[in-house]
Length: 295
Image (cartoon, rainbow, N blue to C red; front, side, top):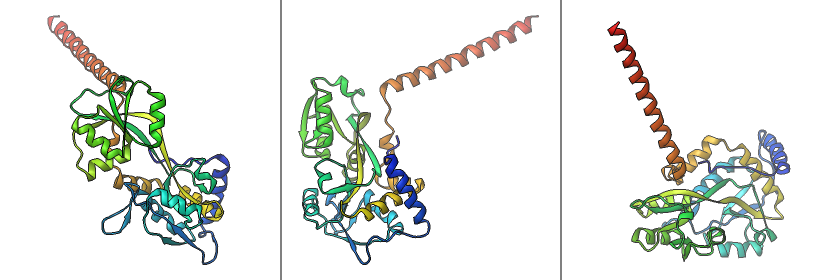
């Protein structure tokens, strides 16, 4: 599954491409001696979070660090806060840059966005002790989803007969799944990976992507068009090897290796036919050898 994707609209792509060529000779000036105030989110692991020691870390932080040599900015990192406070501060003009955000009409009133630097699919997770099931098979079953998450409205509208259970966050849903309170959990694959790593969640399996993705972008104050231009151009220049290295550090790729049950069936059917073909060929060869020995 490819979760790294940088796909700006054609106009932005042409412009950012031109900026990328200019960056080959050095970063573009934003505004002389103008610091960029970056507001990290306090608890959105594995994308951005604050450790108990007060250190800011996460996939989005690593991406920003990889972009910094291509940016002509003086970055000031503000204290970590919940997302709601970051957005309020951005509306007041107290924040210049944020990460790991989905563009929405409400946010677009005061923020502009780069093209997504990562697209994270939402998936269905079930216990390993049960036969893999897709969402369409769980009518009447209790399935957890994060309350207020973007995926919640999607699944409630598309899967009307599922007994949706709103939970505070993905970790609560996964713990409830392990305890048997739910038959499934819908969560983004990065959160699932983080929970498995950080909270020793075991006995669960990812069975399908549900057709919904979280495109995450950098967001900046709409007035700072130069900052947006630099970010878009730098994202184009970020090489695939660096992107993959960052992904592997924060998202366990083993949790991405799920397979649609239908595809699994076809794969086993193909394997069975291949084995049968080999057996038939061997039997035919044996018959020929025996016929030759009788003549």
